[in-house]
Image (cartoon, rainbow, N blue to C red):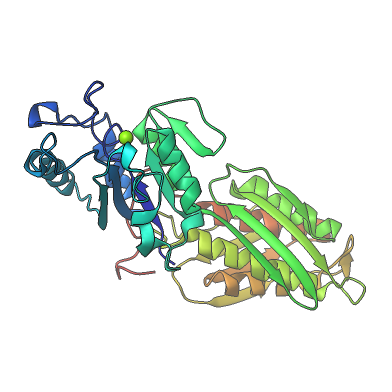
Length: 364
Ligand SMILES: [Mg+2]
């Protein structure tokens, strides 16, 4: 599904004269600080940018269309010069007394976005007024209030800094939640690849929880896992399904993979040595060489670690090669999970404001 960012114009992209509350001439055209750089970054994130503006009485004698147009076209042309294009422009010309359903926060102009093609819950409205916040609520989208540091209840962010908005959108983009229920298990995984969320893990298997904690600590991600599986049968379905849902969540959170490191590798840990190689290049291969000598570590069967990582790698659509040697089986498992976490950290880490695709093919 497509996602959109609906952006107010006056007071958000360009300065709004305090008395007239309309930009009447090129002399009054002034971009808000940092907005062009921020929108240039945001336009790389995979959202459609949609301009959404109330222009009271536009087309009337007191606010002729030509007067509006000279400023508006100049603004659009300046933004286009930095690669910022609006997929759509929703401009309502009514006045407050008209009580038009098209006037923000009304959603009369937003029919195209309400037909089911857009993921509105993960779309945003950015504006400088509480009516923009109300518009977001009416659309079922998230609100970002610009021009204030006081955050109303219904806002996900309030800031006076456009760079903060760009960085917020870039980070929230990599948060994914997946729920999966079968006759064997019910699994919820939520992951934030940029580690800005709280973490809690309850898989029903204490040792697996301990291992998944290693991913949180060493991959720099936030992870929430809740699993209720048929442990009265055995551990198989629970471990397999946690791995599948975790892998799908990581894969989805990576998005188009722009700016990531793509590869990762590592060694370490006491008498053990673990080597974990990842390539998020889009091909699936799995290699495993970890010589467990006990049937169980804690409450978790060691044979299931291979199945766990095989399922995880397939769900992540990646090459995953794991080798480890050592004597202590607890250390072996922990070295593998820590190694995987460190490899994942390197592979998914994004350079700030880098949008390069780590491939010469142009697609991953
Ligand atoms: Mg405004």
